[in-house]
Image (cartoon, rainbow, N blue to C red; front, side, top):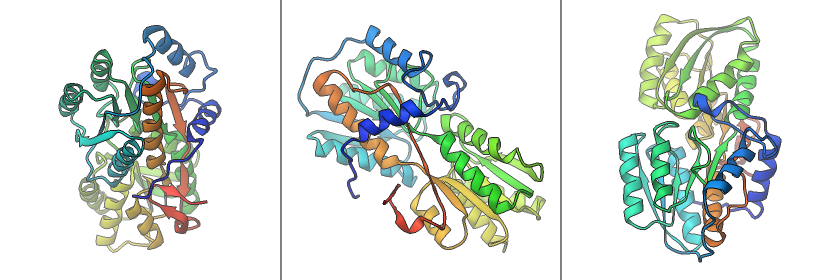
Length: 349
């Protein structure tokens, strides 16, 4: 995978965090984007962290960084895992990537293994906003800093960093594109992600903040497909039979959107149903090029993973990350106008 560590990315993250408004309340399980000057959000996180955690002694780069993500069968999670491992090795660490498969028990076991192996840091895309709190605390109690990527947890002051894509902002862009393509009218289906994932509700809420402004658009079905392509295919097949006049399908991620593409193809409706997704996966980009998908929201997965490793390295060497705990990185709308500039979970200038 092409390395894309950018000098100044950490500074950019701080500027982004300062400019972005909160996506939602963390206690609800939705992702948040907190500005440092807000005493109820990331600044209080930083204060809590400084009051409860002694800075680590200045050290040197080296040792094991454990990278734990959902299943690498999903290209998004594989991209972030590969990027984190490559970044860690470039900075002089050993790195090991494992998958918890969205199983909290397996996640806990992998964190136990990281502790037993003497890891110097853990990069984690977690298995649930609530169930992960105890696992992160366990690592912290063992003296191992945890840096969260992609998904937040419903607690602050435990993880050293929580770096996520601005899902609300990105989904808003997708929703606007979807409405424009639908010309503000017609029936549509929404495919929701896994209920325990903090991002599922955030994206859906952002979609509806845009779509619900148009009285001519009617949602005839809203189904959870758990981020899974086969499940999405099966559900959309059934839904299309019950709603043959559906004009659009909007999905919480590209994997489900691609399942919808396959179901629409099988029904002979390609070109008649507008389909949008979220993530910016290579397969979704190809579907856009082929005219089978309208758009997707590009999450900068590689950049976020690299930032987490860079901040882990800084914390190991200095005892500080130099950043607020919560950091939010803007997404980009990918459609026919810019897909030719796409690289793996990134957009070239």
